[in-house]
Amino acid sequence: MADTAGRTWGGTTLTDRRNARREQLLAAGLDLLGTGGSAAVTVRAVCRTAKLTERYFYENFSDREALVLAVYEQVGAQAHQALVDAVAAAPVSANERAEAAVTAFVELMLDDPRKGRVLLIAPLTDPTLSRKGVELLPAFAALIREQLPTGADELDREMTAIGLVGALTNLFVAHLEGTLTAPRERLVTHCVHLLSRASLTGRPR
Picture (cartoon, rainbow, N blue to C red):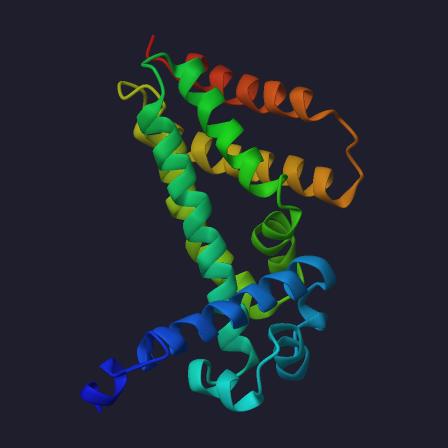
């Protein structure tokens, strides 16, 4: 089996082609979930969008829920990594780190609104993603908590980080849904202000 998977046809191996088909299906899932919501994602719609047969769908995913979850996890991982990279590359001041993180998140979530809708809006209506969203929350809260003053009370830091994740999520959801019409620059500035204020008020007295 391994020999067959590694054998080359037309310059690509069977494994390469399988991986390419998986990426096509994930891209189709992102497009459907990020534009039409959870109800738009069916096996037939995904295959039609990816221009692949159902045989190849089931080669990669056991069912429609498995694809939806994979799309969500992919976007979640991209968002988490973008934040980690932005903070790591930012200067030492808390305000500059906050600005770098918010800007990176905005670029990912708003420059491609499909990703923003997958990560922030789809879990509101899809039970599978709702559970996964709850599981992802601690990872994003931890990123914020790590930027808060270490001398502050640990419980305060934890509650502040969780509260900020909720506040920022609601701001981005409102922007994606069109109920908040703030210009992009104002949105970034406001989010940075929230994070910076948390860093200042969380300092030990």
